Length: 425
Image 1 (tube, rainbow, N blue to C red):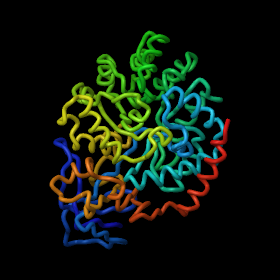
Image 2: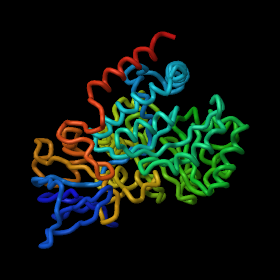
Image 3: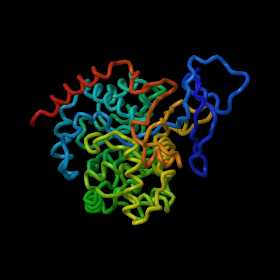
Image 4: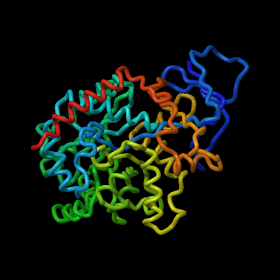
């Protein structure tokens, strides 16, 4: 059993995030006590003095492609379609299972340094990806990525069954890459699985203007309306990016309880646009946040995503009051968890999963502590992540990783894979 004491605990209430002076006990993979010091103290294997720092739920990265670490800072400064079809897809064709394993471990390390305790990942070679997460002790939700160019696009059902009963750290959601890569033959397949399993469906959605206009040309509908018309959203789900959304699109999201997962850094870097997050709030749409992959971002840093989400929205609306820090923090910790189906990881309370982080307030960027929540969003960075715990196990603490392999070995293996994968085509 682990005891966190002498610090602040950040909880999310209906009125927003609140800080208390309680302590938290963790037993196994669960939180077992949140409250003040008791007289009947049990035996603890470790007692962690927070020294005034903040214990809070970990960030959840609600959209990423982890193993794309091999393309970090390789395919940059290009429009999305050229970036995707000329650089990304051709090099991805060289990937092997062992590549995915080591490249995913590299991403997991970066998640941990950023206080991210779970990822919603859409990529390839899922057996090796899952093994990397289990070996590191990291939590992940896999998202189907069905596309017409897949060698076997019909394997999603097998993966859905397999990975939803595989390991406590692993789960799986139905999904397809995007409307423009789905192909007519796969529409009934995706819709049929959603209906058969009463399952939510996720996909890249309305990332660029050209994607939306292309969908209207091909289908006579926006990507959102196309998905709704085919029954993809009958049991929930959501979209990644959601940059160019019509009022009708937002009404679809509201009607089906869908999740809009924003990826502000990637959208800005690829000049895709700024998602209408304030319009989503006004339309009562569920909202989450993710980094997207390291080929388009290029960092897997939730602090940067939170800051860009709020700063760009203020710029978009010409209003510094929109999307306050409290809402963005809630999106990163609570909204993203619920979008991923991780309702047991969305807060600090007894019987919740012990997916926790410690934010070091004893750094210059956290002083003075006029408003700790705003400091975390507007001034916070990876340097403030003192500890990251997943399922009750400390995987990162004070700059050290505890994931079963030396950091230097992962760096070397990832660099070797990236060199081979990015050779000239």
